[in-house]
Length: 223
Image 1: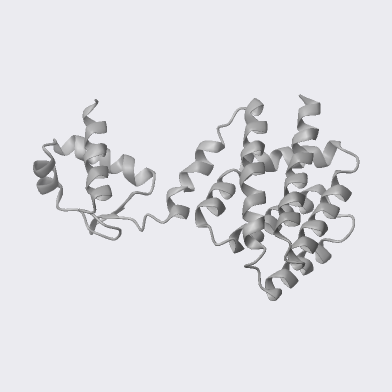
Image 2: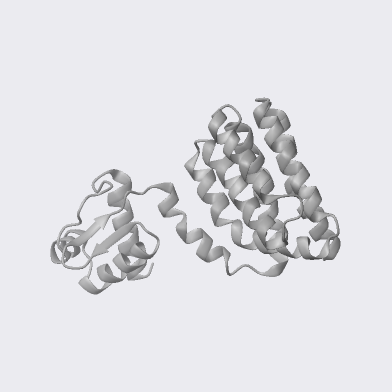
């Protein structure tokens, strides 16, 4: 194992074991390096790497701290990595979205308040019957983000946010090239909202699945 990898594993072990907890300040560099049997250079490299993925927070002049380890913070790196996807993997990202988003939509069914449902309704109404593709895709992102957020599962919410890049580009391209894409999307959004208002979790799950599968089906036909 490379020295830096060993240093990362040792710091990770301290966090996982509870020796370091969210918000804790790490010991001074010299002390921590001695305690872990590491060189100060390898410790610095490990700290830099863990800061990049939001495990540690290096505060200039104050020290290094364990972050909150909140899922949303930790999964921020996912969207960065996902942006390097190859075009031929977009279907795989859509497949993951098709697994996660309908489940989150079903979970949200019992959680959404009437005020939140009214806000979703107002968002769709404000979009109108003939939005531009860019307006539709932006609204689509906000519509589903609002529903997923209401599921109460921050991990699913963060994962789906992280996956939004490549699937958003696929939706834009579909809107530009498929004749009925806009009207179909508007209809599917209305059906999802109607199921949520009826507190019908399975109908909401089904319509969310149909909604994503229609993008998948179109994309397969273009490859």
